[in-house]
Image (cartoon, rainbow, N blue to C red; front, top):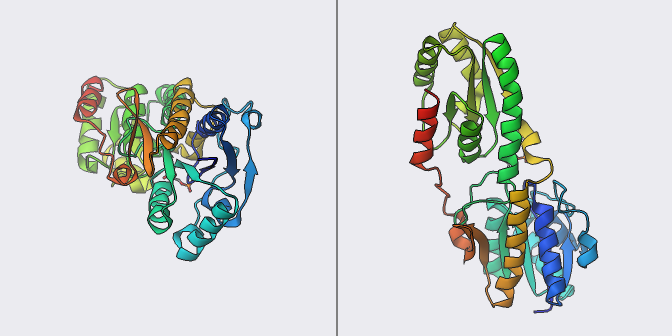
Length: 324
Ligand code: F6P
C-alpha cells in the first residue's frame, strides 16, 4: 500500500473537512502518499486529483462543508463512467480509495468494487444518520444543534403570538434529526417516517394540549414523513380543523447542512479518518468504518445499506411523556 485517494460525495456534512484532514494526516504519519479527489465521483471520472500532505489540510478542522467539494454524480452510475474512474486511479498509481459520504456514495462504491475489485473504505458522512453499522454519522450532531438553535428562536416568536409552528427538518427517509432535535427543542409533536401518526390524531393531540393550558406549540416534521411530505397541505388541514391556533410553517432547509462542526463531529470524524487508514493497513477492504458504543469498528460495506432502523421506541416514549 503506497498511495491513497480520498473524496467526499453526496450531500455535504459538517465534519467532512475534519475527516479528510484525519485521513491525510494519518497517511503522512504512516508515510503513505495521499491524493485528494475533487467533486466526489465526478472528479474521479475526470482525473481531478491533487496531492495532499499534512500541511495541505491546516485550518480546516473548524470549517463546515468540504474543501474537496462534493457532487451527486450521474455519470458514475454508468459503466462507462466507472471505467473512466478506474483508469484514472490506475494511471495515478492509486492503491486504495477512502470515500466519505452517505448511502448513495456507498452504493456507488459497492458497484465499483464488484466491477474492478478496487480496495475502498467508506466513512459515513451525512447529516441524516441513516447508515447501518454506526451509531452516528459525521455531521449529524452539528445538524441537530443547528436545528435546536433555530427552533429555540422560533419558540420565542411562537410564544409571543400564541401560534402553532410546523417546522420541517431534513433527514431524507429517516426521522433521526426530527426525533432528537424535537426532544431537544421541546416540540409538542414530532412527525417521523418510522411512525405514521396521521393528521387526525395530530389535530386531536394539539387540541388536547391547548385545553391543558399551552399557549403555543411547535410541531417538528421530518421531510420524509408521509403527511409531512406536503407540509403546506398539512398546514391547511390544521387551519381548517384547529381554529384555536394560528398556524405557520418554517422549512429549515439547507442551513442544516452548514456551519462549523460541533466538537463531537470533529472528534468522530478524526477517529473514523484514522480508522480508515488503520483498516487499509490491516488489509481490510470494502468496509465502512463506524462508531458503535463509542468504539471504532469496521463492517462490510454491503451491511451499511441495510436500512438503519435506529429509531428506538424508548425515544418515542420519552418524546410523548415530556410533551404532556
Ligand atoms: O442527505 C442529506 C440531505 O440533506 C437530506 O437530508 C436531504 O433530503 C437531501 O440531502 C437534500 O439534497 P440536495 O442538497 O441535493 O437538495
